[in-house]
Length: 141
Image 1 (tube, one colour):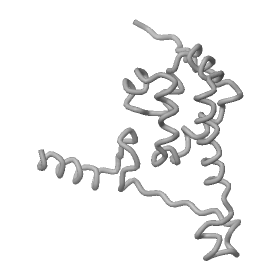
Image 2: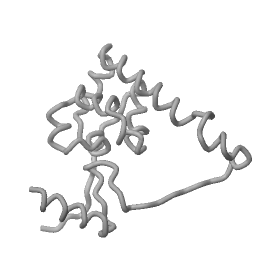
Image 3: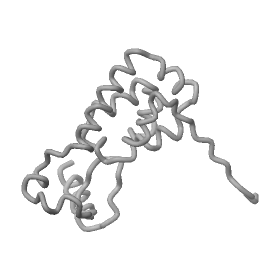
């Protein structure tokens, strides 16, 4: 069989809840359980079947479910709280770095390390520590 082309249809988030995509693409979610609860509210079965991966969820969720949840007052209340917490975290000016290095606030800083896991759905391809952890867990069983 020859595949000429593929078309991927991705659900469109209503404007009212469009920040779900931004947060799903920021590692902030990996330590924020309140954000992850939003996905359970939208479609628990899908959430469980894709191993709790927020970016994958947003690509696979049913458009009708997204539109319906965007009108659910309980969901919107939880969503607004999460967005408020996220914005406070992301746009905070009162940080350790700003206190210790005020002259460097406009510097760009990047730190990359694949030697530790952030969440079970984010595989680590670095090898070293991942293999050590895998061997350690096997010996515990």
